[in-house]
Image (cartoon, rainbow, N blue to C red; front, side, top):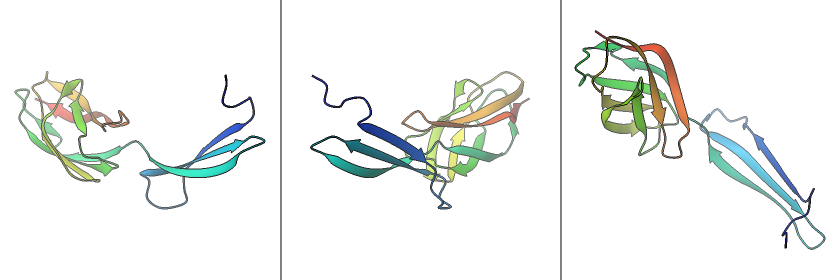
Length: 130
């Protein structure tokens, strides 16, 4: 048997007016003849990647880079192009350090993936292998 009928559940997702861009507001409204509840749950937005230093290194990999952005969470992973970076350390919600993987010469994007698989990317040419 269905717990809810059509029209009894409303879901609203909005970005709050706060300056903290890592949170969104999710409101669930359930209305039945026996139950009426309106609950707001805070969720986390995807990370953003704004810059990294240095922006180039050798194709052998192993270049230590610092990524700056927002919304970085413990357990985040980093990709340079399609390859996984190593020694990833989330220093704070705005800073990650890691070592680049080996790669082919040329410009690559850099992506941060949080454990919930939400991701932020700095498009190519974020890092260039020589």
